[in-house]
Amino acid sequence: MDRRAFFIGTAAAAGRILGANQRIRVGIIGSGGRGRYLTGEFKEIGAEMAAVCDVYQPNLEAGLKVASTGAKPYDHYKKLLEDKSIDAVIVATPDHWHAQMVIDAVDAGKDVYVEKPMAHHIDEGFDVIRAVRRTRRVVQVGTQRRSAELFLEGKAIMDSGQLGEIRLVTSQWLNHQNGLTPRPLKGKLDWDQWLGKAPKRPLDPLVFSNWYYFWDFSGGLLVGQAAHIVDCIQWFMNSKEPVAVTCTGIRPNLTGAEVPETATIAIEYPENYLATFTLGYKAMRYNAFNDQLKQFHGAKARFDVGREWYSLYPESNAIEMKASVDKRQPGSFNRAAPAHIRNFLECIRTRKDPNAPVEAGQATNIVLCMAMDSLRQGRRLKWNSQARRVEA
Image (tube, rainbow, N blue to C red; front, top):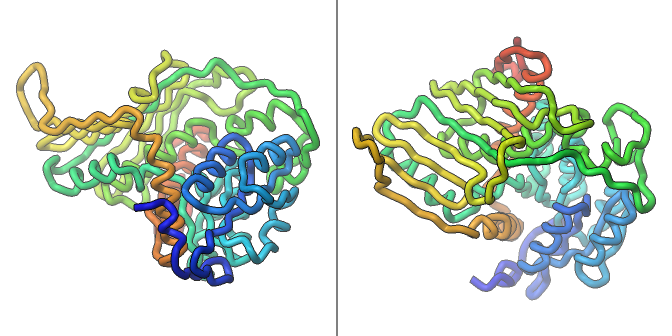
C-alpha cells in the first residue's frame, strides 16, 4: 500500500475533520535523539510534522531541522496542545513525564503516540486509561514488536498450540556499556520544567544527559529493555497482570548511576507460569541481531524468539536439536517502528484501537514499577488486582 494512502479520505482527528488530500498534522514533544528519529519516520510515512517542543534549546533547534518546513517551535508542551490544527502528538520525553503529557494531550483533543514505558508509577497508568477511554482518543504505546511482521508470525505460532502447556519463559538482553555520557550544556535549558513533579534538585548536566539511570526519572535499561521484552511475553502468553514480582541486581557499575545495569526480574503470573528477564550490560558486545532472546519452554516444544529471528524446537532426545521452523531476517527490525507508526496513523482515521493500546501498556507498566520497587526494597512484592495495589 502506498504510504500516503492512509491520509486520503476523511477522518475525525483531534477536533477537526480531515478532508481529501489533507495530511495528519503531528507535533513532537521531546525532540532528543528518539524524538528526532520518530519525527523523521512520521514525516517519511506521510504525516506533516507541524510542531516541535523541547525545553532544551539545542534539541528544539535540531528537532525543527528534521521536521516539516514551517513547523512551529514551542518551549512548553501545553502551548503546543492549544494549537487546534494539531491532530496528534508524539511524547518522547523522559519517562516521568509520559503519563501527564498523555492525559493533557487527550484532554486537548489530540491522539497520542507515547514512547514506552507508558508511565513511571502504577497509579499514573490507571489515570491514563481513564483519560483515554473518557475522551475516546487513539493512544499507541511505543512497543513496536506488536506491529512487526516477524513478531506477528511468532504470535501465530504461540497461538497454534504446538508448544503445549508453558510453565516457564526465560528472556535476556545482553550487551556492553562503558559508562554514563558526560555532555556539557550547550544552550538554554528550562530545568524546572524538565524536572516537573520529580523532586527538586540542582541543575546537573550529567543527570540531564543520562536521566535513564536515575530513579526519579526512569529505571534504566532494566526498565527500558524490559518494557519491550515483558510486553512481548505478556502478548504472546495472553497475560494481563502479574501475581508477584521479584527483582534482584548488583550495585551499579556505571560511575554516577543509581540504577544497576545488571539485574534479573522474576514474574509470577495467574496463568501459573514464571517468566524471567535478565539485563546484562556489562557483558560482551553483541550485534543487535544477537542481543536479546525470549525462550518459551513448552511441554511439547521450545520457541526461541530473538530480535530478527525465531526457531521452534520440537521435543527431541537428540544431542543436536533441530528446529522444525527457523526464520532469520537480519535488518528486519528496522521496519518495526515504521509499521507501528502506520498502525497508529491508520487508527487515527478509523478510530479503532491500535496494536499497543493503553491497557497493554499498563499491564507491562505494573510489572516494571513493581520491579523497580522490589529491587530497591529487596523483597518480593505481590499485586492485588482487585484493589489495584502492591502488597508486600
